[in-house]
Image (cartoon, rainbow, N blue to C red):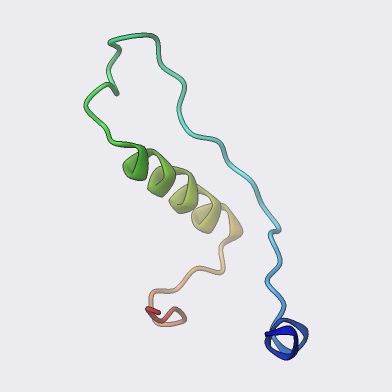
Length: 58
């Protein structure tokens, strides 16, 4: 596993946070994974390097 990390490092170059909402607010229907997906999508959009063809599923 160490060899893999040294050959292909993962670098976070941008951050985003999940939306904030009050109790029973507009986003109450979203699940935790949906909140996480929103933050990840924002990071990828801000990084301007995102391409669906660059990613593979594990």
